[in-house]
Structure formats: structure tokens, C-alpha cells
Length: 312
Image (cartoon, rainbow, N blue to C red; front, side, top):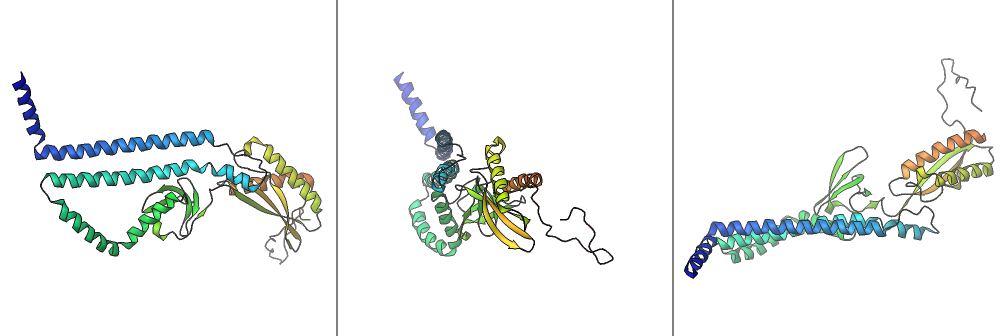
């Protein structure tokens, strides 16, 4: 019985000791480790996102000051940062695992990897001079992720392109602009980043009113509309404060331009401005506040502009 067991062990050892089987085992272990690491990182990312969503409060629509508002809304960025860091760890772990696996396989088949490693060091220096742009892109990508300059889902201005970030890789950043065009921007070429998704932003609306209108009446109407919009659940995910009358921005001819400002969610300034204009149009009509005609009609064949019974 012991002889049969020893014979089986020797056979198994000899079978496992063959070169093809050893190479296959090395790559099988590499595949297994890569899969386990990816699953572990994915679970870590999901857990971190779940915890961030539990801890992070919803947008607080009334804040005592700007600093408080920024502190609360910036907590929402945890999700984007966790996703970016998880993607970086997946790429780095895959690179390390497969590099070790290839070196081990070469060593098993009898290839002396010591000169290869020494040559790789020399070649790395030479390659560093020839591939400075590539190395620059990689280093910039690492710092972009670690410093949380932007993450997936952020609306950013990178200079050559403005859009929503869809992927942050070590070499390039992929974003989609408002027209649906996908841009690939090399990280090393990003000299400045304007992130429109960190904290909060301001929607600004300039509205002309007739020169002889009562500005106090205009202010009362604007403040009333702002309070109504803030109390409307339809704008709960858009407004972080009531739209307010900021004052006279410009006086030109027959018109006085008054400015309305509102703190909004980072990705909502344009939509908020449209909603404010629409609400003010109806409110001005009801209150009898006149908006001057700034664009004059084209003259008729007689050289005179057509009569406009609604013109005041």
C-alpha cells in the first residue's frame, strides 16, 4: 500500500515537474491571482461607495454660508474618487502580476533572466529618453487620480475639450462633450483643469427691464419667484439656495439689466438659468413689468419699420 502511494507521488511529481505543465501552472496561477485581486478591488469599491452614500447627506438647499455648503456637497465626490482609485489599482495589480508570471515562465524554461533584468535597466534608461512623453502621461495620470483633480462623471474643462469625464486612465482621459463627441486627452498635455463638479456653482441670469420701471417692484417679484422655486419639489435636485436679486448690472438705452444669481448643483447651472428665465417671464407679465424690445425689426420696402401694436 505504501509502495503504491509512493509510486503515485513520484508519478505526480514527475508529471508536475514537466516544463509544459509548470508553464501552464504559472499562467493559471497568474490568471487566478488577477481574477481574485480584481474581485477584491471591485468589492472594496462597492463597499466604499455604499458607505459614502450612507454617510453623505443629500444636498442641503439652505446653508448658512458658502463654506458650509462646499463642505457638505464635496462629500459627494467620494464616489468618483473611489472609482478612479479602484481603476488605478486594477491596472497596477495586473501589470505586476503578469510581469512576475512572464519572468517566472522564462526562468522555468531555462532562460537566464538576470541578464534580461540588467538589460531591462539599461534599456529602461534609453527608453526613458525616447519615451519621455509616455512617461509624462503616466506620471500625470497617477497624480490626477491621487490628487482628485477630477473623477468619472465630473464636468471638466481641460483646455482642448470640455465635457463629462467617462474614463480616467493612466495615459489618457476620455470625456464626452455637449455635442456627443468623445475626446481622448493625454494626461501629460493637461496643463490646467477647471472642474465644474466640485462643490457647487452659480447660475447667473441678466434680465432687461424698461428704463422707467420701479426697481423695488422688480426686486420684490424676483425674490418672490426665487422663494417659490426653492419651495417647489421639482427644483430640489437643482437649487442649493433661493435665486436672489443681485442688483443692476448694466444701464443701456431704454433698458436696465438686472442680475439674478442662484447657487445650484454642479451640473445644473444652465438648466437652472433656463428655469429662472421662464418663471420670470410669467411673473413679469402678471405684474405688468415691461421688457423693452432690444432687437429692432427689419425695415419694410417703404424704409419704415412695421407697426407693432404691442410695442410700448
